[in-house]
Image (cartoon, rainbow, N blue to C red):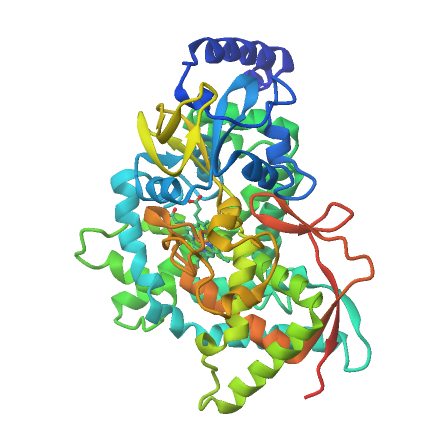
Amino acid sequence: MGYEISFLSPGTLGGVGLIALLVFVALRRSTPVGRVPGPPAPSWIYGNMLQFVFPSIYGEHEFEWQKKYGPTYRIKGLFGEDRLIISDPVALKHIINNRNFIRAPSQRQMGKLIFGEQSVYCAEGEDHRRLRAALSPGFSASVVRSFLPIFSDVAQRIVQEWGNTCSTHSPVLVNVCDMLDHGTLDIISEAALGSPLNTVANPKHPLAQSDLNVLSAGLSRSKIDIFADVLLPYIPTFILRNAIRLPTHAFRALREFRAVTDRMGSTLMKEKAAAHEMGLNQDNDMLSILMKGLFSQRKTKMSPDELAEQIRIVLLGGQDTSADALAWCLHELAKDADYQRRLRAEIETSRSSSEGPQMDYDSMPLLNAFLKEILRIYPAGPYLERVAGEDLVIPLANEITTTSGERISHLPVPKGQFIAVAIASYQRLEDLWGCDADQFKPSRWLDGDPCKGQALGPYAHLLTFTGGYRVCAGWRFAVLEMQVILAELVANFSFAPSKDDAVRPLYAGILVPITKDGVKGLPLFIERIKQ
Ligand code: HEM
């Protein structure tokens, strides 16, 4: 213990940091990336990182840089490092489909801490391929459709809770994020684990508390975290495993989350294994489906330990992403009373013409146009961090004129080159989406396909669910879940902006709505619709 304390003393840390920095800067090679044009850096220490990571609103600098320097440009990282920001569609297609572009080491280390060392998030190469194949039966279109009753049920619970706080004549100011967070947690826990929680009515459930604490830890990032990103890859795994015991707010939240999910996961896995032994397990949740794989002879199967680690990524990755996308839906709808009215009419027509209790969500043009536009303008992961696993060449749709005057259509990148896969920027490229690409305009989806380029992602040409070998495993789940919840909420409530409508998108692990007080939240006036 004493050793740990002296290791962490500021003097020692400073000394180690300085030596590491000198070696890092001295060993850096000059590469063609250094001749790619990009914005000037305000400082040598931080480069452009403070502008990129801590803008006052997401994209404040990034979207301007894209307009000025094109879809492939260079920014400065810490201590003069060259980093690439890429939204060029041909380059992105190449990167997301090529397993030699790997997850950035700092993100992989973070993934080990949050999800676990054997999670699909951290796996690369053959291991990743095997885990994805083993996971796929739990995410098929038919399995996702079988969750419809869960989606509807939870949506009804939200309607009931909000219905208790507001009536038809008196709009009430509500922070809609709270209920959306709990609703999506209830959905993912019931659909993924077969464990109904009802945190919508019982927000103090330990999983709800620990899940939201982990997510809120992402909001307290500071300048120091930029340095941590550089140091993280060099921290050996055994130190990382023990780091989680440190008495900080973030690590405490993580410890609790891991303990709660491990307890839930192992209890449920034992129950399902016992039911299987007795030939009883008829459950249709993802965990039950994936556990059938454990007992099969499939080559791609996971070990029980590996399966247990996937529970965390499904619970965390499948909750806040959908919750925040729904929050953005309500934020934009609140500003457009006319679209709200027309959407409500579409939902009523669809409801009255459907034969069963479920509507045909895919044949509702206004609902889907709105959702697509939300996913275009507010992608949960506005950029992904990748690194070249070896010396590679990236093909470009848009040639670059280097600072030495050379025109290139292929960009050589050295092993270790950092690349931001700039999803939010890609989804604002004027060449692809038109000269109004920056505007939130759902109607662009009503007159056919608004994207002038080749398809990249799995849904609506968008990269919000990324694409290629790491495409979001739960994209079908997320789309149907959002369709159901949005339709139910709009059918039952009207939404209007709060008087002080100052919510802005900021990146805190994902793109979250931030109030003027700097906390996550979206206060809106909601009013019950007369049925
Ligand atoms: C609006 C909702 C969602 C969005 C925007 C979204 C987006 C993404 C993105 C961008 C990635 C790639 C991350 C990276 O490689 O760094 C990803 C991965 C993943 N997502 Fe989603 N996601 C959503 C919902 C869900 C849901 C509901 C589930 C589960 C039911 C889920 C499960 C996963 C898993 C397991 C991965 C890891 C895939 C891998 O590394 O191979 N996601 N998601």
